[in-house]
Length: 259
Image 1 (spheres, helix red, strand yellow):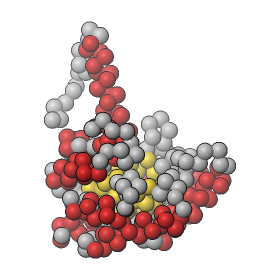
Image 2 (cartoon, rainbow, N blue to C red):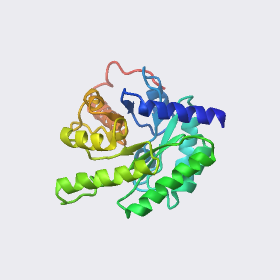
Image 3 (cartoon, one colour):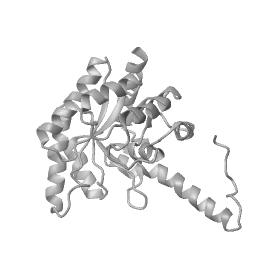
Image 4 (tube, helix red, strand yellow):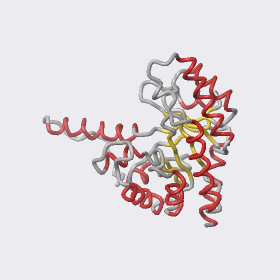
């Protein structure tokens, strides 16, 4: 458990450092090895959407937890870096799922609130953090609020107010950082980051829509992840290469032997 505690402390320190932590999400061992080999990578994070897709499941806890955890275990066993797992909304019992994730070597995780009543969402956050304490580690919970992605036609100021209300409640419960997917506009990121405090906000990088990571760092963002988009980048390259060679061309020049 000492090694696990060390990895957890390393991951927490990466979130609280002034430099933004950028995590290119992975979904299997070879993607984890490929990302880990990039200079400057100090931690790994899995993408639940991408792991589910790897096995032919739709996103949203449709992949059996056993299968999901087995892939995460394989990733953890193959790397010396701290690993954070996206365990969606906790598969019905956030604390129990966190305990099982810790058992396979995970030291951090994402937990969706899915806009459940705030007291229920806070209780889930507390359960995950308690699982970490019981295991003797400072589990790095990236507590996620879906206030933006599920906002619908709600006026934007109300949406941001709800983001802040929920995020501050998760921080008060002990979560070190709060993840707000869908938060893309500079002024909104600035507002939320200031409300949470320095190095407390996590956002996702969306192709063609997000601010550069260097600018997000200036705004006080703690962490930038990529969710399913790294897998989509890989699949786009695969489909484009297949179309080219099937259409009479050749595979891309400069393709590297990364496996």
